[in-house]
Image 1 (cartoon, helix red, strand yellow):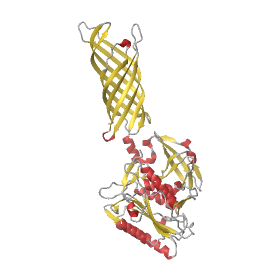
Image 2 (spheres, one colour):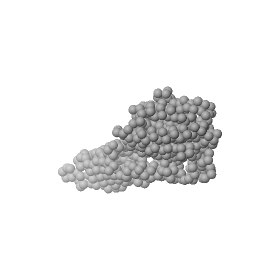
Image 3 (cartoon, helix red, strand yellow):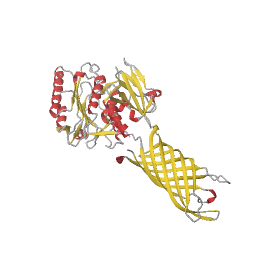
Image 4 (cartoon, one colour):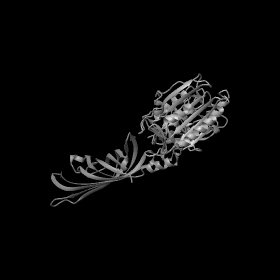
Length: 539
């Protein structure tokens, strides 16, 4: 389980029309402006978002590093009320107006990560109607208006304009093109979600990864609007298909006029991280300086992939069945490239994964079960006895067990157990009929190899038991009491059903043993076993 976090409440994106990744590449005249808004509080009935501000920061980095946005032309607004948001839009519009007076083509990109619903952005206890936001963006003097809104039900913005859910679309424009594009993280009736593993929302994470190069399908070093949306659509759908919040389907609506491919970012001028040698799989790239997951690459067999990153040290993460694989890589200065090397991956336990952040790691450690205490009830029977005599009757037993999962490895644990039973029985030996009370005590130490089977756990492993059996006769002129003590090798298997709400798990278990038993005349070794139901608790 990717474990998903809080559900976002608003998600929409107005696509940024860009003929080049920088002003210089667009005839040296295009100027790009951005307003990036994040809000963690949606007011009554909503949960506080964990990663909204991180998402806005990640997008800002991409826009400056690869999208041709000057830092001074990006306004970041954190947790504003409606008037503060309106004020930020007015300030950026004034700057757009000044640039327009000189004849400079301009672009406006608006991004929002936060809560939304009922036709409005939910800015704490206050609301800003989506209709008002849309009218403001449409009225801007920027040649092209871009807005990215990442929140629940954000598709409501595009719904009125014929939004679509297709995986891709084609938009073309020249540097002097004009128009308006909206891309949303979810439909009008869907939730937008955050992920603890990604340290951000699914949609913004996929969008930023695409802009950094994961979306460059044709390998020309430029990420177009179509490629960025196509990547964000497919990765958002794939990532959310198995979450409790349900699948998200990004949507879009556009009205652009002009000729030429819309390039959002270019993969030049930065360092390059290559994934071809790493083989197939999904890789997350973590920046420890900013404590963020900066991008993700889904490597397909037979293809290569790359990301553009500023120089520095990064951690590349790949999930394995029992742990995570981490590799530290250094992206060089001067536009150099470095390849991810699978031979350098280190195996790290899930709860020690540094890319999850301190809070998530502490939750994982708290969720880890170091000990399970259990009790059960079942039967013990000897399925092979000498000469057909029923010397050892089938006996009801009560069991107790203490288990230490993961004590010896990610899927290898240790357990100790005991079983006690008693039964009255009759048997015949040498023509004499006897009545006796039979008692049994078995203690054991064993290994548990834990194998997940969907929501269930299958356990299998060897064990060594100490067996005591005693018989006390209940008759006139009774023979002396009899007893037997020996060590017995064996094996056990169990199927367990977790009940997480109450920290319990139910189980169905079976064990088999070999008991060496000799008489004065023959080797009469026995085979026996137990089957029982159990209930275990993790304190």
